[in-house]
Length: 470
Ligand code: NAD
Image (cartoon, rainbow, N blue to C red):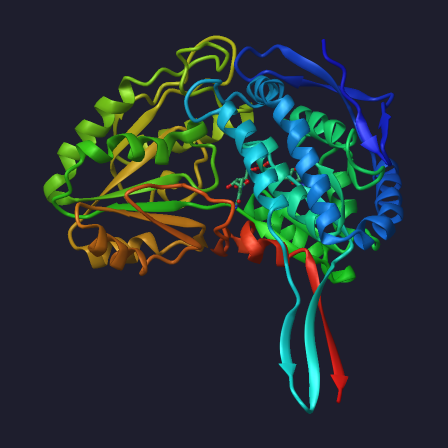
């Protein structure tokens, strides 16, 4: 069994206390994981603070070079990282799964290495010279969830390092292994203390948020925990990026030709078994086309194999943990009790692993939990609408706003309707596509701030204005 350690100040740190990380497809132990503590977190923050002095003073080009070397190391270990993700999280090796995630880790690292924030001149005339500079905010605390553990760790770590911050990361207790390995690999390249990792749950996370020497928290997780992070961070006036839960709506415009869109629609809903923040979680279909869409979509989904992600023909893996499996199953039951039609799936699988079948729920209504709450699993409610205005109003009726999509034959018309969705990213004829240069973040209860691109980099900086009299 592969051994894992924390990394603090460039040293591999083991702990007396460990716990088992479970493979969600088999119920077997993947590895014993060292269990971090508040004391180890404090040590990691001290190391990150010490390293900040040298790292923040490197030139922009030097840090870009370091990140490209990190990219080289990731590239050499992409398949190892991908297998770790499948083992601890469940997403498959085939299809848009663990290889996409490990490849994304590499792609985002390279893209971030190539970004650069330059000085902005505000005034340069006979009266004076005003320049806006961006400086690293300081030590960054990163807290990540279990659904895309390696990708989200990358999204947090790389921009912070790029602008001169140092980082302590705390992965989800369900999926720590890919992050432990990523940080170990990065420490083969970076100076000690620049990137540190400590495991743990709310105890360690809570201490990070309250820690006086952590300047900023970048948090990806549920809206409930995110609100707690904001409350807890108030005393030390933490800078925050919060990437929280979503409940993205997709609206298919009337008379849409479905066949060319089916594959994208399916993956928009079910990538990673629906355990994706910006997955399509409520599908609105015009009444004239409703039964046809339900039938075609269900038919497509019924041909997709759910199973152990290590099997080559598996395209959807299990849920990552029992908590999530129970939640999805209970939301589907509630919908059934309220009169929904379960077209495919809807029955929990027997045997080991946290499996739930791909489930299509027709005749879904706005009151159902499956519609109101984020199911974060492989069950999609399909809702009927009469007018587009009504569909958009219902799509906007929830207190979250991460993503949303409009689907239709006329792309310009779809794009016009897309602007009316209340969310951070609106897609047309796709759902969930990301680009390392395009800012991504939620509005309303889905979060504060953005990641990716230059706007994402700026979140790890503070503004300093130099104002010279002439
Ligand atoms: P979670 O909120 O339960 O946990 C997230 C992280 O917070 C974990 O590392 C956990 O250990 C830590 N944590 C728990 N209590 C804490 C506390 N009191 N203080 C500090 N840290 C604490 O979320 P999860 O179940 O791991 O992830 C699923 C959720 O994440 C879903 O709602 C999903 O939509 C959301 N998510 C959002 C995005 C996005 O970009 N907006 C991306 C992925 C996932």
